[in-house]
Image (tube, rainbow, N blue to C red; front, side):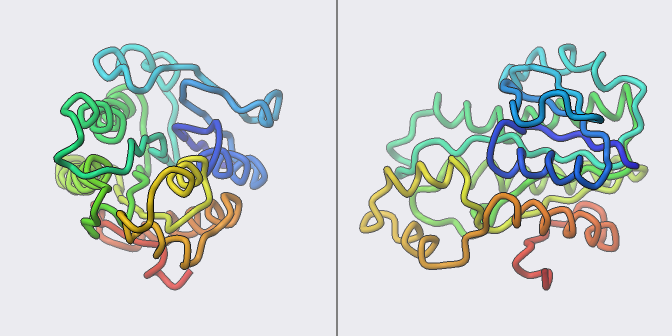
Length: 232
């Protein structure tokens, strides 16, 4: 039985990860603004409500929840996409919101876990957007690219933890569904390419992602990995 800490479990990949870990007999400790009703009263499930975007107070807010636990795996899943639009049309306020949740909140969680608990492995959910640089994905792509290098830096600074940033591939989540409903493929060609490619269910995506987490332990700590290139 493992102890797994997961952020952002109300829907999509995070919900499926929590469900799959519980099915495997793991204890799941979850952080996020919204709980997942499907997981209520499940043996081994522990939820702590917290606004992860409140980065200034996050370390203090979660300290008691994580303290003295030894986590086998920490999955930093919570994130936000923001609107798909050109970078020149994106305000600094919007960019800061995305960076706070996708980057700095994860820094606060890593620091808190390392200071008040123990972790064998920390995996940040990254994205192919971090390396593709496609039109319209501005703040999200920048935040995920920054997340990748932050994970690499932490690996150099905290060798007692194995770090990875893993892109899970394209998964049908509420975030992706909103992109399909609101973004014009004529303006943002990458949207049509995503539509035409392989899109996994959250359940299949979670199983593949957890396999990637296992395989990541054989890679250099701090690596960026993409499940689509891992033979999964």
